[in-house]
Length: 619
Ligand SMILES: Nc1ncnc2c1ncn2[C@@H]1O[C@H](COP(=O)(O)OP(=O)(O)OP(=O)(O)O)[C@@H](O)[C@H]1O
Ligand SMILES: [Mg+2]
Image (cartoon, protein in one colour):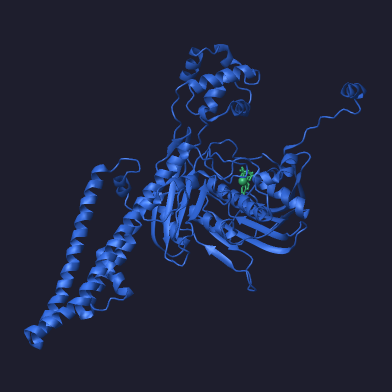
């Protein structure tokens, strides 16, 4: 009863007024969804968005990127327990047209990359505007931008703010200035943010991990960075030089495959193409949909007239019928031409910058289709020379999606699930059940695709679909096989060294005893000792020969099976790591030295270095 009375007394005056909010309003209230969920993440995300944009812009213009980064603590932040942080990123890219500056830095969903089907780092048109919003909310100032394109005589400097109510960029303090790029670039963009946050330098989620990860998967990037020092010293600029001068060439874009979409996405997709007919939209907007597919859809019961209707006037029921019929059609998988890989050569050069390493393997899989999306997986594995790392510490995992490091939420990520699913014990590593392997290793996994499915809008975790996990797993298995082969070789060398040590230890005693019993002359004793040294050499050479023969047999088998794909042992061997070459050479040189040393009568001294020399002789 009471309820009824309430309803009756309610007047239009009291009724709730329906309002709409702008996209900017939504994001400003939900910045945690796009990477601003903690003080440390705010710093990392701001830096990341600016660097991603710089790299994308250079790549699209075919420019070898040179990016300078400054991160500094400049005061106390307005938020509790926060510092005021200044982040500046300067690139040598094409620059931004002054008319576009407010859209780029102050308007959400303004992007040149949206829905293009390319492996660019940015996809959504949210990143840098979210950083401007965070700066505005915490420091009451927007993004300070200086930009110069090729056609501008002078650079333009301004501050851009987000008009949150209207999702528009507002430009303030505009002025013409000289372009004074730190590293002499003729054009480019410099963007500076003053934000509340906290700087975390070390650890998986630290700035240093982001910077080294970025240079690992962008071998063509020269990066200069200045971070706040930990002690009292002055901030120092560090440079990571590029290891290749090849700018990745951007492959053709690809449209999404109809089998990858949910109904809602399918309908929303229809509005991206303006006033076209349903038939034209289907053929233009999707991969592997052509005139033949339309005929098949008609055959499946969809009226021909529906395809001639404009997408604007098509009914929800029409979309639903087409969607269902399309899901039931056998469509060709999309082309894999659109994926852009780092490349085995470049990755091999790049991985050596991770520190002192004594083994590495790089696996670049062929582009393939996972969940109807073109994907390419690359894996780099390195063993650190520094064995002081706790033995039971998990390997260091570096994850990359479209060449951007992922630093949070790793448990749910396809890459970590794939690593956990491999039996690393079979490759000589320690691994607790269903966990990451342990030891002084770095495992870097890179997934590139024009349609990476992230688990969240902040692009921190790649969705772990069965097909993608399996593809990553295959790459890891290939890398693991190379590693185990290397470990096997090392332990063979160790075994031989043990054998030699025993001979060296006991044979002189034996000679001495025998000479005493037979009352042999000192000259005869000397001869016997020399004979033993020779014997020792013969023994080493025989084992060397055995190893050589085994290797030749293996190579012959590999040659027979070359070309086959998949994670079989032979296949992994077929792609024998070039990474072993320098080590083999070094070992061969050491082997020559070792032989000389033996000849010079130093065979008896087998300290730690002696062991290394024998190992070299084996390899
Ligand atoms: N440093 C830059 N040099 C040249 N153009 C830039 C630069 N930064 C941004 N842009 C342009 O501004 C657009 C918007 O950038 P924004 O970061 O908001 O979106 P995005 O990179 O397209 O996608 P995402 O939201 O996923 O980062 C880009 O698409 C690009 O065209
Ligand atoms: Mg971006």
